[in-house]
Image (tube, rainbow, N blue to C red; front, side):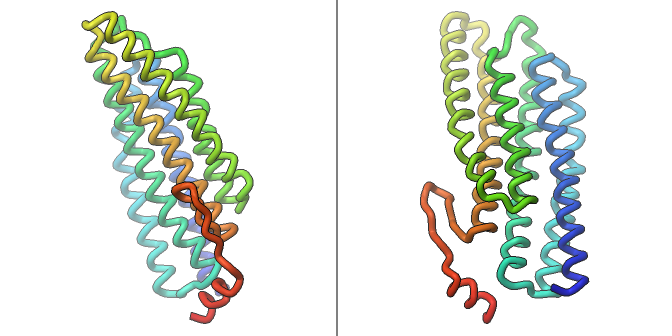
Length: 232
């Protein structure tokens, strides 16, 4: 690996970690705004989205420049392709955090509406998945990535349980239907963030082992295939 490529990849890694820090903060604030009825926090989240969008474009452009200038192969090529994908996932997580913040602002009109108690549990599980997914990528830890993938089922179960609770409450009190729908939407956005974390973990498994685990199937990349990539 050339020194210029090595330096560029190190900077990409640093930029990705910085982007994750901002996105994680957005997720935390968006949910706090929902639970604590803090529209000021929600607006902070929404205002931060432009920063994330700009960083998203910068990371992708830097990655494409490195690909064009240095034409990396094998593991370095896989790493950089994975960076592009994960960078996109982080940007989408930020968008989902903004969606949650918007639902929070709407819910502020219904001070008597209470969010489901399990929401905090779902938030904790989702943020843990996102953190672990990024750690698995940074540390090339396929085992940790597999654990993240398995954790998605628990978040899905919490999502289903809370949706059922909201449906029951809306049936019992029609005046709370609009508020219930806003909360319903926020919970679905949170579940989608967990899906994004799962995708990061799946890409990490591919990066480390060459196995494609998306859609519940595994395709193994043989040593001969890797050698062919290096030759080409």
